[in-house]
Image 1: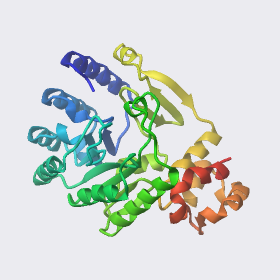
Image 2 (image 1 turned 120 degrees about the vertical axis):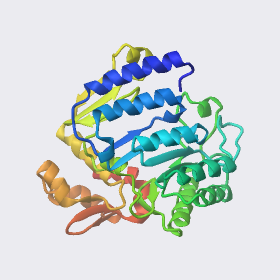
Image 3 (image 1 turned 60 degrees about the horizontal axis):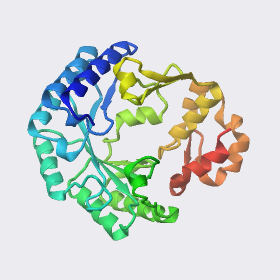
Length: 337
């Protein structure tokens, strides 16, 4: 979040400079994220969209997503997004419950009004992010949060467990996470509530109506190359993982890159498995062979045997059993080489 227009202008200048440096590729999806892009004023937002238009054919994109908070949405910005072919909106909702340790609170009434406005202006592909596992909120509270989201008729829902990171407001306030088995109860309840209304899990934390899966995120989970720009952004291109600086001072001086590493074959395989197995459908054996020129079933024979109680393998694909997907991290400990 920027606090004055001078910083916004300087940041936009650096961002546009970096965008010009990106490899010239034909792209199929764009995601403008990082929290609250719509917090930009209308002039700056238009400059950003114009810049993207100068670089890419926006009307040819399969998906163009913008992330936002509810408070940042207004009619003028919606109209501008439509003009530049944005066709998906992702709205961050932490919880509808008012908690003393949160710095933001979204009232259902306002969320409903803004969602209705988006839909009246042609946006039907709307995602809501919901966080579960807040201390002091029980399963009944979580179900009420889900029911509020479902009353908005979303195309897509993301459910993320609360993660309390070091040096964040929640860690400073000494908020303690709930127990792991409690997280599992919330998660299973969420799956059931969403599935009952035709919103199905396709990735560990992501659910959608059929045909509304996030194309942009699917390309990431399937380990395709992706380009990125902006403070703290990470890209993966030609086997290189490139991480931008988190220092605003460095970024504004065009010192963009903190890490540029070429991944070794072992790392590429591990990344492929870690990401693809997040998907309910897992991965195709042919895709693994095409990528690495190896037969996965032969190469990982021992590891497959060690984890066979968690896997579903047929002649064409490998996936985690649906009931075991939530413990993927534990499974990967034994599956990865």
